[in-house]
Amino acid sequence: MCTQAANIREVTEAAKRTFLERPLRSRDSVFSRSAGFHSSAILHGTTVVAYAPGGDVVDIVKGNMGWIEVIVGPMFSGKSEELIRRLRRAEIGKQRVQIFKPVIDQRYSKNGIVSHSGLEIASELVQSGSDILDKVAPRTEVIGIDEAQFLGDSLVDACVKLADLGKRVIVTGLDTDFMGRPFEPMPHLLAVAEEITKLLAICMRCGNPAVHTQRLVASEELIVVGAGGMYEARCRRCFEPFLAQQKIEKENEKATNTSAHRAAP
Ligand code: ADP
Ligand code: ZN
Image (tube, rainbow, N blue to C red):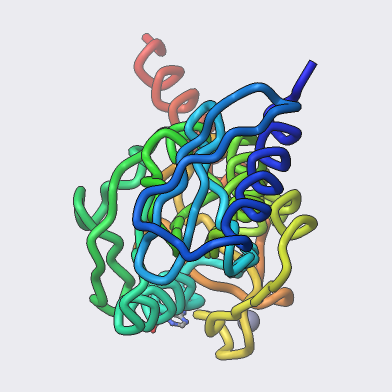
């Protein structure tokens, strides 16, 4: 039985054999005898892609390689700024770009990625990695994904698949959570990436390089979407991983004292 990957390999080989023998036409058809299916090939600018069954697209003539770039660091370290900078350059280079961010993060804008310094670029909302696969157009060459720590484990497979199909995938996200623990799926993404950039912010206590995201509010939920006032950047010396927990305990203590006071005759 043919797997999807085998199908793609089959159609790529069949298309290469066909197109290397004669000049390219804007729409070509390829038949793979061993896999037993027809697949169409389309000329996109200077790139020829073949459509395998299931809607996957393979760059067959240039053999363009896809890859994964990951940008990590704490909040305020400039991940969104760096993502926007790379995507703007791709757009200037006339590449087809699609940009995604999680539905959960609509802090500053619903339709765009906005950095803390006010830079903005249009984006689409998604729930998960598989949602991205559904939304990526076959002709898209560069894919940007912001706040990837909110997109779940399916993001890793989605990024690998898109890179295998010849696309440049640029992903940003928090590598650690409010307790300083690895924040999935970022560690997995780092493992499969070709290129990794780790950015640092400025510690709001002492001005040293900050690697941590300090939660300032009383909540132990893993995901609490917020910005200035709820979080700040801290260096490893000033970071207080248990601050949120201590605040909860203090609030509980206060509530118990108040109700005890009320209950007293
Ligand atoms: P991230 O995506 O990593 O949260 P952004 O790209 O949205 O970061 O924002 C980076 C910008 O945030 C900086 O250029 C700066 O203007 C601002 N900023 C606010 N607080 C800090 C801080 N503690 N350290 C560095 N930059 C900060
Ligand atoms: Zn510090």
